[in-house]
Structure formats: structure tokens, C-alpha cells
Image (tube, rainbow, N blue to C red; front, side):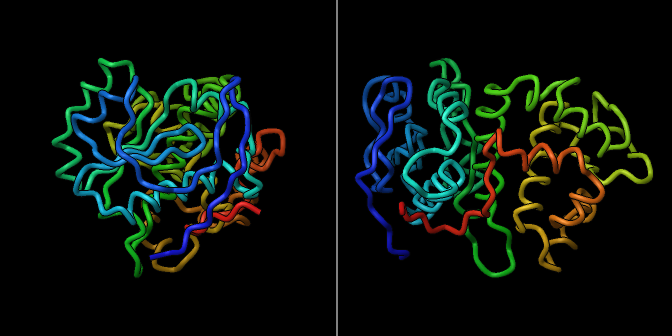
Length: 273
């Protein structure tokens, strides 16, 4: 098991004192989070963003999700989330990761319970796709980033990262797909470099997926030979140089220091300096 680094660093978010995470697994807390006890038994607090695990979720997998979340939020590892505005949105909206032991277990969860209790900002993940090792991609890099951009950035900067037509992100998306498509087209135009074909993914979902591909490609997550072969049907700009050359709009946006997006790919090790 990876050695975890503990820290006593603190920061203020919306007048609430938040401790830097120690990645200890605790029972699901009482109060407004009590509703999660019906389906989850494990919990980690990462700068006020919650990570819940089912009873059968391996603890090491739950901790890995929490560590990657901390790495994305505090990319320079100084004990404070890099973008306070985005972080405040995540905390205000009660953003959470829901980690189940398998895809089947995730499907068995009653998601309406959370939604009826006012928890709408959740992202699911399976333990089986979490840091799997070998040649398989660690889906934590994707699912955690989805939570941060969809709940945090889209609401903190609605005209820039908003997931609807007309935002700066959406303009880049339309260019990458070869045009504006409210629904997934039967066939993308020749020359499109983002060709996600899941028909259940609406326009907002397409924005989320596109931003994930761009950010992680710039950070180096997609450039291994086997990986770029796996994703070629959906995304072709698999490294920083390709994104910068062929999609300069999104490259400029995600590397703009004003938005304090991650500049380093999480590696599953979080150590407050």
C-alpha cells in the first residue's frame, strides 16, 4: 500500500475552516450527508469535496480516488486548492465522488435518493477501473476531472467553461467536431478530431468529454502507443504538441493562468510541500 503523507495545513473556504486531507477513511458523517449512509459506509473528505465508497469498495481504491482529487485541486501541492473560485463552487454545490466496487454495483445504487435530498453534483466511478495497473487506463484521471470541470469550472466561469452553445468552450467544441451538433450526428465531418459517438451524451456532456480529452492530452495522459490506438476512434490529438497545433483555441484556454487548471498529471502521490 502506498505510503500516505499527512499534513496539518488549513485554508478558509466560504468562512469554513477546511483541513488538508489526510486520506483517512471514516464512516459517512451525520448531518446533511446522513442520506449517504443508506448505500455507502466509507467516506473521505478532500478539501470539503466528499468521496463515498460502498461497503465492498476496496479501501486502497477509495483512497486513490481521493488522492487524485487532491492532486487535481491542489496541483502544486502547497496545501491549498489552486483555484479558490472553482473550489468554492464544488463545496457550495456539495460535489461528491461515488465509488462502487463494480459497474453492476453502481447500477444497483438508488441515485434518486441523493437527488431527492438535493445532491445533484455527483460523479460515479467503479473500483475495477480505478488504478487498474498494466496497460489499462486509470479512469480516475477522467472521472475526477469530470467532476471538477462540470461542477466547478462550468459554474465558476459560465461564459467561458459553461456547457452550452455559445461559450468559449463550446466554440472550441464545435470546431473540433466539424460543426455545431445539438445531438450526436450519425457521421462526423471529415477532418473532425473529436468524434464521440455515444448518442446518450447530450451537448453539455460533449463539452465535458471534450475538455477532458484536451486537458489530459496536454498533460501527457494519452500519448502511450497502446492508449492512442485505443482512443483513435474518438480523439486524435493525443499529446501537447498536437493540441497546440491543431486546436489552438482550446490549448490557449486550458493553459491560461487565469483559470489555474492543472499543469501536472496526477500520479497518485500527494505530498503537501
